[in-house]
Length: 196
Length: 196
DNA sequence: CTTTGATGTTGACAGCGTACACATCCCGTC
DNA sequence: GACGGGATGTGTACGCTGTCAACATCAAAG
Image (cartoon, rainbow over all chains, first blue to last red; front, side, top):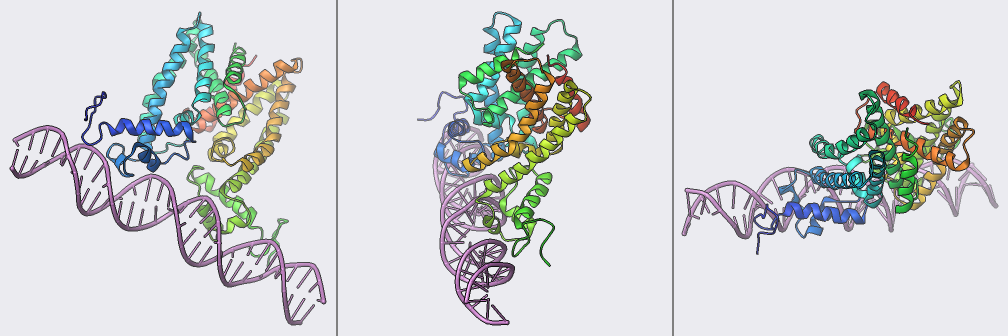
């Protein structure tokens, strides 16, 4: 046996690290991130409770890895949205809609990525690094939609767009605004069209 | 002894219910809401771990009571902000700034109020009821600032304003935007002035 | 073939939320 | 004024959690 398609292909299990991340993502689709336990993830992956500690310093490190994976998916979705749009302005709106849609589709993952569940400093540093590309995509979309704006105004617009979609996403994810996928997207589009 | 100034003034302790809420609020200023334990609150209040269960169905019920208290403070601050403003438009901006400032000043309480820490259905219903006045204040400020808008547009504006300030508050609270109190207020004002 | 280091397991501990049984004590009734 | 009951607080226990320490296993390097 052994040697899965993944590169790590380790000794006893064959890339347990990736298996743990996958198990955590599976569980996250079924429950809130605060109910997610390290022991539960290990159980899901079919190993003992202590096995994860050979690959992650602690629970926060595992969560940070899962969140990092989430940010990579997130960035992909944001970029897909902009590249499919006919012009920069539509691209910005599409990206905002995609932002909200991602949160709606994977609420637990979104909360893990942006919420306070990861607390230890080292894990947070990793998170910052992993989230940077996705946030750059957002900045890029704003810059493309407002090419004539100077730096200060552009910063204001980035902050506004980000706050707007992040706030809407948060309100939906936390159940403060009940919303199906379609309603969520419609709300995002309506709100984004009010931008200057 | 006995009979504190509060009305409940109960048998053994003298309004343990209020004391527990106060203890929880104290602890919330010192730590994140996810580290807040029911046993810790009981310890802070000087009673046994099971004592809270005479006043709250479970941990969620206590948290909901604390969050309800938070929403009452929140509403007060929002209304203070609007009433001190010279006109409706300035009132809306001042209220948005107050929204963000509240989150900045009491991040753990804010997360408890809007975050996913309370999960049980009954507790969430109480939360919805307690949060309604504060959200009405927000709706009122938007309506006052845009008196000529029809219902649909007003709904869009409410959604936009709420998402905007809530998103900025969330980003600051979750450390995604580092911000002192002054910077947080300035960001809120800058962002709100971009509204139509 | 042996040694070694990476990987996984077992057992233990403290802390958590909470169910159950018991102790205490205020208050209305006689 | 004595008393019984119901509200209030305590002690104990269970299963869950994250994590430490010691041990077992096994692929590969010498």
